[in-house]
Image (cartoon, rainbow, N blue to C red; front, side, top):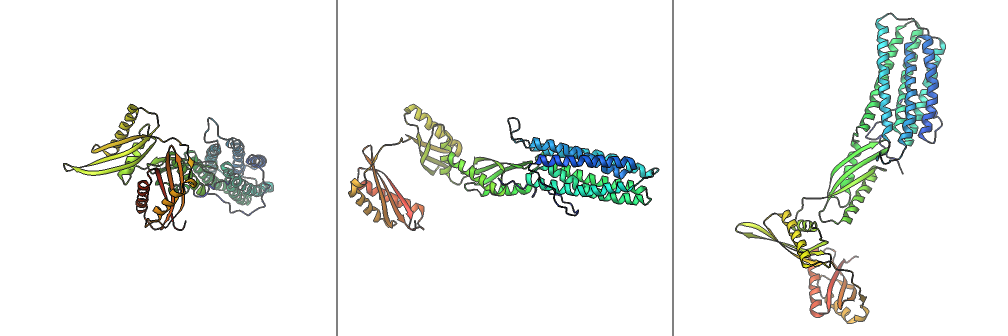
Length: 484
C-alpha cells in the first residue's frame, strides 16, 4: 500500500543548505536506523564534552551539550519507533503512532532547558570578566569532523523518515540539520577566539542557542499540532470535495480529519435521499471511501450516511415517513391530493404498505395506525391518510409456458406493435403460477421519449391485454432505447 504524503499541506519538511554528502547505508527498518544514529551520537557527545572541559570553551561546551541532548533524543526515538510500530489493540484503537510525536515534544522541552542555561552563561561571560580560552588544533578538528558527520546523519535520517513515514526519525533529521549550522558558527567563533578575542566564544554560544531555540519551536509546533489533533487543512479540503463528489451523495455535511504518525483518519458524514434502501446507503458509503482513497491513499475512513431532510415533493416525504413505521416492508402507490376546505389547504394521502404475511386484522390495523401517525407527523395536522395494508408476496413456484402459448405471444406482439411509441417488440416471456399467467414484454422506443409518456404507453398495452385475454394476470412492459 502506498503511504500517504502527510508533509504536503500538513507538516512542512526542513532542508539543510549544507554540501551534499554520499548517503550512509540504509537500514531495513526505522529502529535499526535509530540505533545506528544513537551509536554515532554517543561517540560525538563524549568527544565534544571532553574537549570542551579541557579548553574551557563555552561554544564548544554548547556543542557538546547539544550533542548530548541528541543522544537522549535518539535514545527516545528508538523507544518511540518500537512503540509506534505496534498495531492497534483493545486499549489503543487508533494505534500507537502518536508515541513518536510525544517523543518529539519531549525533545523540544529538553532543547529549551539547554538553551536557557547556555544563554545565561553566555550573558554572564559577556558582562563579566572573560576567562582566557585555549583553542588547540584538536578542538578545531573535533568541530570539522562533527560537521561532516552531522551532515551525513541529517541526510540519512531524513531519507529514512520519508521511506518509513516516521515523524520521530524526521525530528532527529531536523535536529542534526540544525547541528550542521551551529557547528559552522562554533568553528568560526573558535578560530576568532584562537586569534585572541575571548568574547567571541560567548557570542558564538548565543548564536548557537538561538539556532537551537528556533529548531525547538518548529519541532514543538509540529508535535503539538498532531497531539492536539489539528486538522491538516489541505487534506481536509481535498477529502470534503471527494466525499461530495461520490455518486448518490447530496451533500457532505461534516468532515473531521486527524493524523497520527504516518496514518490519516477521516470521519465523514454525508446526506442522501430519504427513500434509499439500507443496501443502497451502504453502497454510497463505500463510494465515498473510494473517492477519498484517491486523494488520501491509505487513509482510515469512517462514513456515516444521513437522510436529506429537505425534499421537493410530498410523495417522497410520505414514502419516507411511512417506511419508518415499525412492521412496514415496502411502501408503494403513493398518491397525494391537495384541496381547499374553508379557505384552508388540506392534503389527502393514499398509499399501499406491504407487511409480513400471516398477520391478523388487529395486527395489520395497528401497523396502519403507525403509518398514518408517521405521515401526519411529517406533513402536519391538515392531512388525511388512508392506507391499504397488504401481505408481502412470497416466492411463487411457476413454469415457463412461452413456447406452449404461441397464440398469446403473437397477440402480445401485435398489440405492442400497434402502439405509436413502440418501435418493436423483440422479447416475450410468459410464465404460469397459481393458475394465473404473468407476461413480460421487452419493447424498444425512441431514446428521447419522456418517462411519463412511456409509462402511459405501457398502461395502454396492459389494459388491452387484460381486455383481450382475461387469463393474464400481472403484466410488465420493459422499454429499452432504440440503440440498446
